[in-house]
Length: 73
Image (cartoon, rainbow, N blue to C red):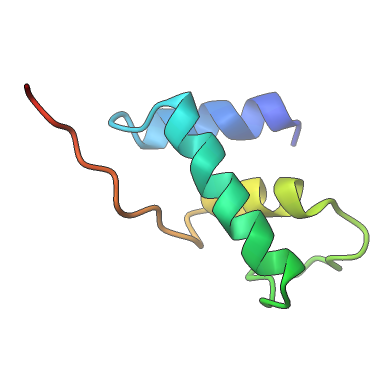
């Protein structure tokens, strides 16, 4: 899947998440992968960029995104 399709899939399945929050989640998971975390997908991590792999994991629901709270001010 292309990055645009994966992004659309994540945002469609998580209506309370916006693109900025998704970018933060992908960044955090990418850092984890680069620092030695094992991939939850059956893909060779050396054949795919860490950010793409992180986005794929989030899109498949293998990595949950927590910590974002909507604030009504």
